[in-house]
Length: 90
Image (cartoon, rainbow, N blue to C red):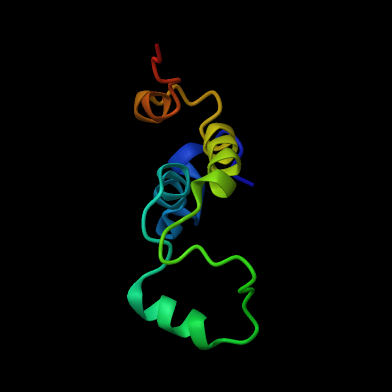
């Protein structure tokens, strides 16, 4: 649907997909306070894996990284390339 279109995908700019994927790559709070309260009381939601209020990047980061990479494929976006750069390690 948005393969190689980046932020220019028609009708999807208000969904803030790039920001959500970045959160799933780097971590942070999983839900806003109001959403978390609703999720805790909703019996239809999965609660087998409790991660607290933070995103479990061990689970979400690989998929989010691939999705962001495919979303900006061949767009030559420097800001996205900087986020996907492999860090230097010693």
